[in-house]
Image (tube, rainbow, N blue to C red):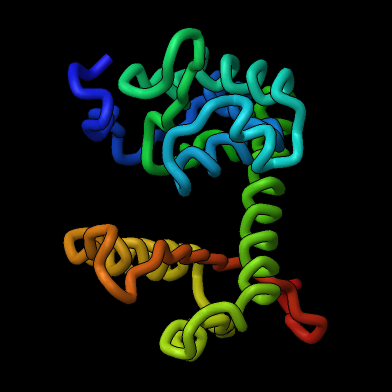
Length: 207
């Protein structure tokens, strides 16, 4: 515990991005575990009870799945917070990257876990967009006028799609050094979703 109880709790070191392997994928690919990890990444450290209230789950369920996440290294104890037996958790990383080899893994358990993982990522994105649409009028016009919900259609090869994705990721990463500290005026956490998906056309001779 800190000597000064009013002093800010020390920050727990956080990795940048973790690449999933078959074992860690199977440990993460559960809807509640992914929601818990997302909540800790977006909102900061919390207890199992706090997360249960926030997500509408029982504290027994959140406590169990937090321990499973900890076993696979996705969350860590935050010892600078809490009193007595109260256990605080923090995300151990800033993001997740899927190893491309997982898409070709012959193990049906791995393929099933990847399917669950990707569907839950899409569900999280959908909930976040729906939350924005339901609360957009609560935000000042300076924010609501800047939000972007766009889509484009391009004809690309897999190589060009990979190049486009890499360039978009590089552009977004370049803004990390420009992050505005908390407490400043007109600052909010901004979520960015990237979806780049091939589609078949009815009149496409290659379909």
